[in-house]
Length: 227
Image (cartoon, rainbow, N blue to C red; front, side, top):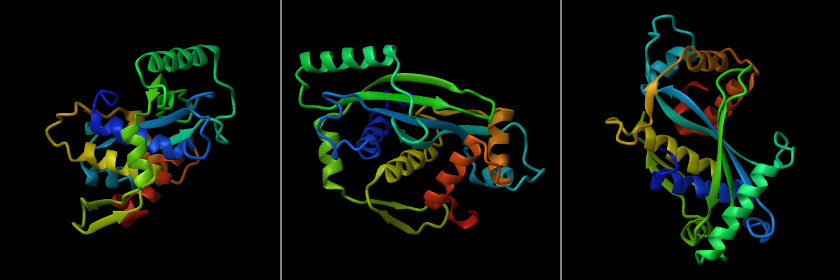
């Protein structure tokens, strides 16, 4: 549902522009591919349940409603992604690039996006890779760099932050959190692995899911009171 929702996917595209350095190298997306790795996790839809899990409150129930959250967007060739693109992915990119050229989008960058859900230290995670066409409107929004302005879901205070990859992710996460009626179809039951990933972050463990969650909490205003 992430890729078919224009608000969510549009903001992820803007985030990918910053994360993958599309403005730093005009060849990226044309002569050479880029890949944005998007880390997905499930958190409780109720922030109080999240706090309880984080601080290992035994009173928190085991059957919690969860929701999708985007914990990170990482460019290919970052320290954690040094391996070259596989032939399958390269072929996927070449096909996407050729199709966009044929459809009149030869001036738009085209790359790949990998959605990864990793729930525990020993979990290789589920992964899906698809093409990422960056339209001119996304490039224009990124160039303008107009700040995000919003209201804290906890304090009600006005939040203003510069546009960046992190700010785009925070907007997406708040947008999903605000969907109380599940019109986005991004709410689901939480598994024990989902719950344990949050507890592990609270214990300060260094496993990848816990570490990525802690980094997200340090970035986003919602968690400022208990990080």
